[in-house]
Length: 194
Image (tube, rainbow, N blue to C red; front, top):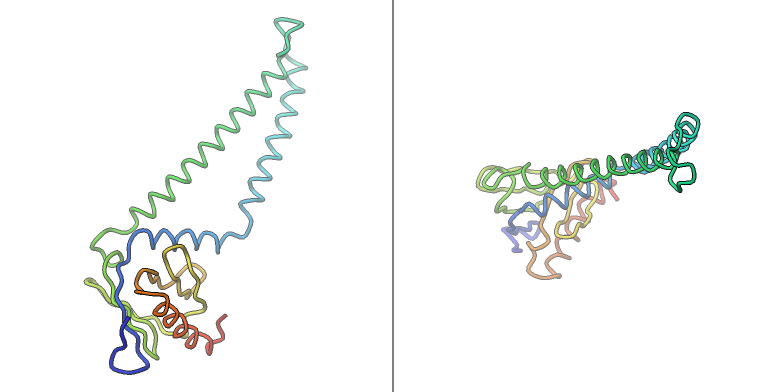
């Protein structure tokens, strides 16, 4: 990190990689999750339990066991079939969801595009600008509400699902990083951000 022309400017360079976008994506999912997924899974589990009991009663009423003294009768077979089918369907949905999330993080951005690649960050009294081989952007301090950390990324949040992404490896040492964080904290505090 270097000081540019004035004391009020910080400039540093970094390389945005897919891992930073993955950090951002996972953090957005956590921030936007309102607990509805847990309730959905709990409701689905309850529905499976009630349906299992219902199918078990129905099987006892309508099916005649082939072997009277077998430990596995019609209701048990029905229950096992329903539960195993439900669990396999849930497993399939989970696997597909995981694959889609990973594929999105890898394929949403291409090397050499406007996002992934080298960046020069410049912090001024006006805001934070990011420039690279294919573009430049500026985000004003008034838009930034919060600074958080993900495993390899610092996120300057402008909206619940949008942030300026700064790789933590952009800083040569902890002193530079603390200087960056203090600079950001000074500028977002006056706007009423937390």
